[in-house]
Image (cartoon, rainbow, N blue to C red; front, side):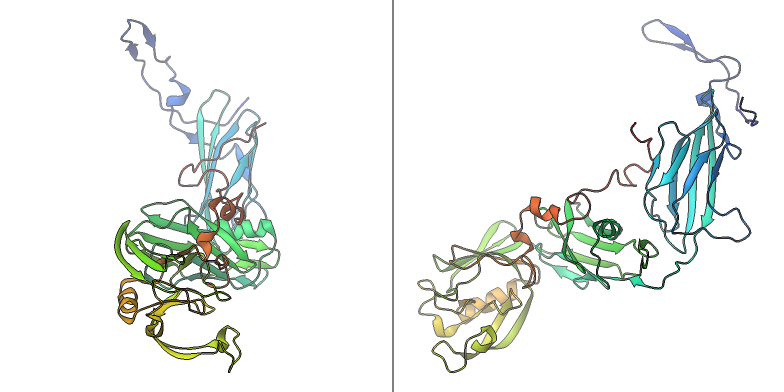
Length: 420
């Protein structure tokens, strides 16, 4: 028998008349159990946290909540820290035990709300609070987000640089789960592990125009491994401008520029000649330089050879770190629109280059088609992220191919019993 005293609110009897003519008596004199105010379930549950005296819980250990009364069961548990981070957990099918399945944060204050049900179906409630202590190790995993705050084109990926390498898949999942990207308007996206210390985030398609994108980390104080705990990260906010895409057709020697789906300019160009073919694929504008001195030695051409060059170049818009630009090339105006004569860059008249320079920004897109060159590398030479198919991109996520693990806390804060 359950001997815990319950404080009940007695609800008067009401006769409900159904439209079809049927009538049902709502309750007896003692009130229906489900209409009663929740009773204090303090005597029915226990947890493995500290029991007062200023003690703090070990963040290394999972949180456990147990039903002490055989006539009662746990129906719901929600655990959240002071910053709003939810703790994932699992409730046994018989409601006798709940345990956390995601790490607790160090130096955090937790509030745990437990719902119970007695043998008569009456609801009980219990709210627990406790603090976690400091981790034993001082090794921290800090995160630096990029790019810097500002306005970018719709092709700009988000980057996350880790202070220490993370190789283990389970540890990567802990890190990735804590890195939050929110856009307004909302759009589907996913992180992709470039290597052990770097992640990129991009949407399935390009960002919406005039969007606000906020990036933050919930990793601080979270245990990643036995010797590594999450550190601080400065949040990031960027916005996007118009959707600007420049399509260069190497076979027709022309560039067409689109803004929000409408053609706004077309101009003759020249691209890479045989042996120096311009890379195919989508590239992201990395920056703009009014003047650049370009030398053949920078791309492996021996000084003094027939292909050697040393030129002052103006209105240079960079699309790869290895030195591919869209720039003014007044020396090749005679070939622009009819032949490919460059060493890999896209050349155009000074007037056209100035217009392009003024009308694009970092994060805008330059797509090269019909070149005999290789496809732009996904990583390491700029942002070739958009050349990776979405299905393959999601496979680079540690969270089950880019999908979140279970319901998001904001969608379903309450945790349900595990399937039998």
